[in-house]
Amino acid sequence: MIKVFRICGTLCWFVLFASQLFISCASTSVEPEPKTPVVYVTNLKKINILSADKIERNIDEVQFFEGAFSDKSFAMPIYIQADENGINLSVLNDFGTSMGDITFKNDSVEFESALFSENVKAEYIVWDVQLALYKTEEISNCLSKNKLAFVSENDGETETRKILDGKELIEEITIRKNYIGIKNHLRKYEYHLIGVGDE
Image (cartoon, rainbow, N blue to C red; front, side, top):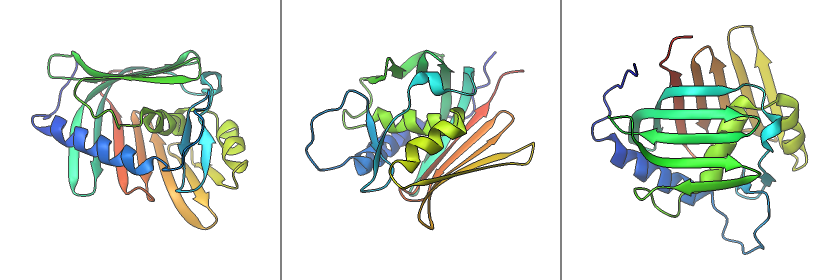
């Protein structure tokens, strides 16, 4: 049985958060649409998101999703399925019904929801998930092609992954049992995925 924490009124904050966050990540330059989705890790440096077969940790469960952008915050359950076939995220309401889906499969990203702005860039959410679940060497190789550094430290209980542009810390990912924390210092947002099921 899913434990649903207090989420009343948070959907509006999530919509605002997602819209502001991913509009701010989009580039204004006009280029042909590549086959593989790209994300701007910094305002100038972009990368292709990784293929699904680069995953290291599989997930197939409901998690509690909470986050903050500027002074706005939200919290709600979200179903995550991630494996070598791709990534699927479904935002759930109180009754366990999906209110929006992001699907990454066959190197393409699809976003379906009548509730969220069409300006939301779902590939940025996929990239954040990849930073937490995909192989460190694959992430490092991807970033190094654009002169970005990737550092991973693991003390046996907590793994910390960081993206740096020179000395500037761009994004930080914290991974523990039943917990993933993502903090983007450049875009000024953070969110947490907390396992709610029994292992």
